Image (tube, rainbow, N blue to C red; front, side):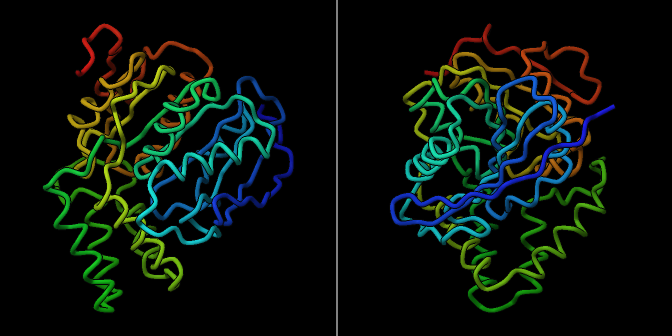
Length: 301
């Protein structure tokens, strides 16, 4: 029977003039290095729900609001993943965490990847969900359209289009909890404050105007790349291609999942990353349509 987690603590941080914060939750029975959860462009430290609770059965969990997120300061688009990785490194220093596991989704994956490049000794293992090395040309018009709707004040239409950008519109796609996730997202976008909208715009512009990652420096930490089989924002083929930039990587395609697999299949995501962070083999995964050990595949050059 799982033990009751210990009370959480919130910590304030500052880096390069930007204020931000973190919440640390302690496991009653930690079995591997703490896990840092780095979310998407609108994901607050309070939004991890079942992922955080599931991981607390095995490890301490750190949920940051890095600059540009939640309760942190807005981060102008001119700043990229280098500053955000520096803020994450500083946060780990202030919390006294010498070595952690990283689980990052979507927008947050570039930050985790950068920290693994510059400070591999700080990262035990890394899991990147819904990621790719650059925004494909096909996705740019929809993202720019969302920004245009915000600029014109069409908040209701903005919410609908934003959800359509994040989730596939294929009516035949079999996605777990799709209706529930869509309803949650629609409500979330409909209640954004002006401050949250400003941060959404800045973060989206950062994605569109800058290179997401520099793949010239190969991360050397063990990394698993996760993607939903129905993901149209970060398609499986692009995620796998990105995985080949890492020396020690695995690629897992999650069945019945879209871009928001942490909401759609949270139990399965917890199972997978718990196995990986504990050093277990990625075998016998009934929820995965594809599992590849890419260490046997020639890396991209």
